Amino acid sequence: PGVSPLPPIPQRGRGRPSSLLRRGPGHEPMSVKALAMGLPPSAFQQVRWREGSNSTLSSRFASVRVRPAHRDYWRSEQRDEEWLLIEWPEGDTEPLKYFLSTAPADATLEQIVFV
Image (tube, helix red, strand yellow):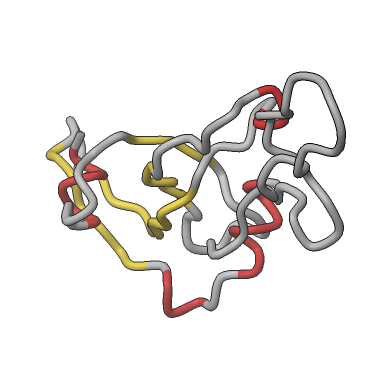
């Protein structure tokens, strides 16, 4: 969050101007695991999403607005922000699952988990 690719290199001389985004020091993508491990424990909330055959299904989740960076150096515009949903069950040493969602920016954590 708050980090994006650098703008295209300004044109020097003749030729077609560059339009591709670029990466530089401080503007590299971050892995979802590193992002999840860097979140404070208070970012994760217990959410129950449906009734299972034995009991109610629940786990701890956190959500963060991110821009996917896959091959962004071949793009001329940034991707739109999406929700990154992180599941980290109580007692596990690291996050279990990651999901990307194009839900609206004002969606609640419970709504994102339900979908």
